[in-house]
Length: 254
Image 1 (tube, rainbow, N blue to C red):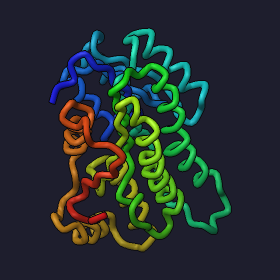
Image 2 (cartoon, rainbow, N blue to C red; image 1 turned 60 degrees about the vertical axis):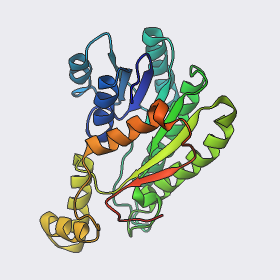
Image 3 (cartoon, rainbow, N blue to C red; image 1 turned 30 degrees about the vertical axis):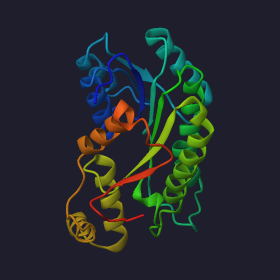
Image 4 (cartoon, helix red, strand yellow; image 1 turned 135 degrees about the vertical axis):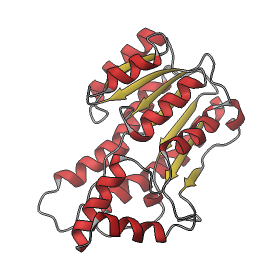
């Protein structure tokens, strides 16, 4: 599974799943654009991958202008986009009766509208037989109390994936979604702390409870998600499209 000569854009690439995918794609031979809205660690990660093979791009995917400016930098350096990984996203507890609606709207804007902006801008520069990989979640397949915004966004990503896959099929561009369960990232730990605080237990107790509901009983590592993304991005995955693939230790069977 090699990506020699291919160019990949990965959003949310400063840490976690996005960074793991960027590193794996780089190791497989791709040139990678690491995109994030914070400069923290982004330049350092790109430099470590090599200036000829990696580019750090400041990009706020919620803003169409920022996406456009970032895309111009990518095309100016690499000339095309073969692979898009829409990984950037945010989560949080958003009770339906909360006075503040800003967090709810920001989660939807970042996860869904951001993926739309980045994909739309990338497709103008993508040759036929390209790849779009969207990072959804198992929460796109089942609900969790207090997480209406995040569940809405991740379910929306699956719908976006399925419809876009059919739209781009004449160009042999595949579009798939990955739906991780609990992944060992700071975002997951933050979520565990928030939920634990809400129900009055320690984060360690909640982690134990959460993993007791996972048949394989363990968290997914970011590198495991990266390997699955590599399969979809490579020639080996050329006939996989319109799918929402879970990587969750068996916590969902849909």
